[in-house]
Image 1 (cartoon, rainbow, N blue to C red):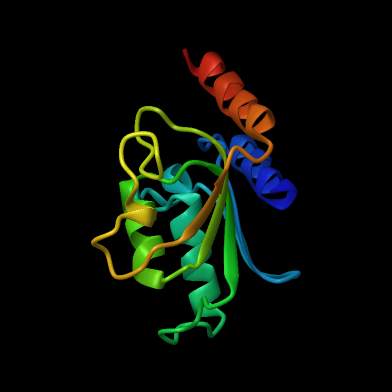
Image 2 (cartoon, rainbow, N blue to C red; image 1 turned 90 degrees about the vertical axis):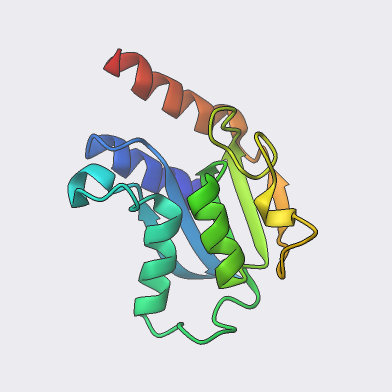
Amino acid sequence: MRLALEEAYAARAADEVPVGAVLMRGAHVLAREHNRTRQGGDVRRHAEMACLDAATARGTGSPDAFAGCTLYVTLEPCAMCAGALVLARVPRVVFGAWDPKAGMVGSLHDLLRHPRLNHRAEVLAGVLESECAALLSEFFALKR
């Protein structure tokens, strides 16, 4: 999660919403990214999506490409990102801060563990929660 926080700080430095994500297999980092919606002019460039794209571009595009992986992300994934994680069959997701307005891993709904979907991920929530939440709160306080 510390690496994901580093990415979140990089996002903040780029005037992006400070969310970072890291995809790992064991101790090996497959990809690390942060939000790039403003930089790329694309609302789909959330940290999780950018991380999956970066890992796929490095040759991990097979149907079982993410077996044994854990995605660490500083904010609870939204519907788009949770859906992508289900489709990519990422087996484990660890996140920091809860997102009561858009979170789809327990706040509003739980796409990652929905019993009718063909893939369910193990989820660990609240890791370094106060630090992840504080970074977001500070960022939005400066914007208001």
